[in-house]
Image (tube, rainbow, N blue to C red; front, side, top):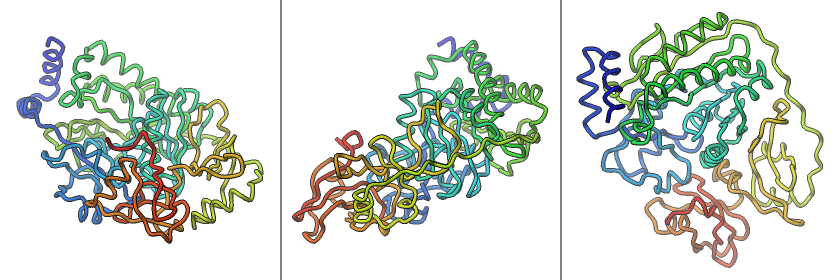
Length: 441
């Protein structure tokens, strides 16, 4: 195809003597696939011991591993349903690693769907501080929300808002911002034919302009002294060094800083480029610091909300977690465990905190999210199934399973100790409450 010929000519100009090595990878038909362990729910050591195949580390983050070529349909693995890992192209983990998230940070992921980088940020926050994940496209924002739930994240806001509106309203609020900008996707060509067919030099240039616009929105939401990582999964100079060079010229209060990583190869002094020769499909990332002082928007204290006694009775009958219990609020008919954040009016919030359940007359219909955020010990009743047993496969298929007759009420279902969903136990049977849209065929 003519457009691919043009793309390869540009890559030859970019890579010089390394173009032949790139071309060898490009034509090999083999792509890098990986998973990243979700340390909110599972340690790397535990996953290695139960997943059933060998995991080889990637150079991009200590929780990242290559998937063996022979492993297929990894999304059907019970541990994936449990949120023990996220399927992620290996080099995609590089941007969050460069961001340097610390526990307690307030972090904005501005272009967040489908959620790989957001859930990586949440793992690093470890339940402290909070994450704001935004995706302008509503359908993609719903996929993002589903992944936030699956990975058991408590301290997140999910929104579907234009970056300029969001960042203006949240001026100076965030310690760290990730802008994983929509791009021409050259690093995805080997596994995405659609990205190839859509590519053109004109598309590259239009992406670069959009990326610069997004960065010029993001800058307002970053506090003075805060840090921002800009990343793409493309190789083009225009969308990477070109965008950053122009942004720095327009915004002298920002500077490129050393993120301390050694993977990939340097460009713009401290920025990093990753090519297939470096162990991943392709990524660019650079860390910027904002030197100017800014005034941050304040958090808004929630108005007092009377919680009916039957809500507390449901909660105490099902859970032991006192932190969530102390932050309950009711919005419409839904019960949430929320937290203090700035005024969110006009920002199209899909979720703030943990969805506990829905009020139906004088009872609570629990939500999948609450069970996924808690560990086995934080629930009053639990069924623990083996990853290789037929019971977990039946449960994920939506079937009732046999349980101890002593169990009665809402019960968390685990796979090898990792929470996966819930059901309602009665008479030695567990009525399946696993969401229909997530069930295996």
